Image 1 (cartoon, rainbow, N blue to C red):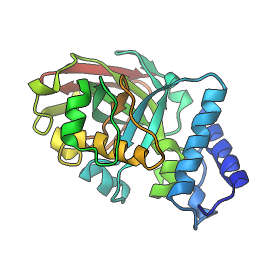
Image 2: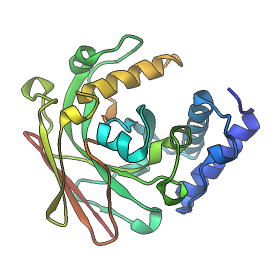
Image 3: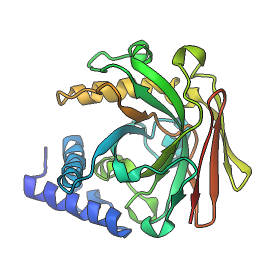
Length: 262
């Protein structure tokens, strides 16, 4: 690690305040170009600890920048991982207040819920599928706290991978009943299709993102517990939204989920 604890604490406070107050900031590597991956995740973990200390619950995990389209859009080459707090959750068909966000975008995802613990190192797709209770459609609302959505990978990791809101719904499916590589998705905005894709867009198989997350957590002695909700990463490029927009995700064999922006 390159940063001292005081700096990590100060950066975590700054980024979380930006989230809570819907204010943007310049990317933190502008001031700390030597910060490393351990620093980035330490800042993210400090943000998580701040939320827990205020009474928020951590209700899920997420992988980000997992599709080739998303990596190209963001100019990066490696997936990143974050967490989801309880107040990020939106009921199926529910509302998202644009006034609470900076520059929201939506991503179509496949959500996994585990029935048994997943632990790395050496976690692989087969282990993930064996540990999965069910999968379902999910829409993640990302909202980078960085000005003009401009950041590098370490800055976005520190910012909890732009996590802001999410919705899951539809019809939960058993992984034995669906080929997650070929399953098709359509995301609509105001009734007009704006994104198309298949599960293979996420690292060749969405479960690969879950395996990478388990292996990532293993480096710090953590695991993915049974009963964990995990968003496996955007299948397509993110789509910008504004007040008045209605977004629906339809996933082959899993029904649909939706939310609206007000």
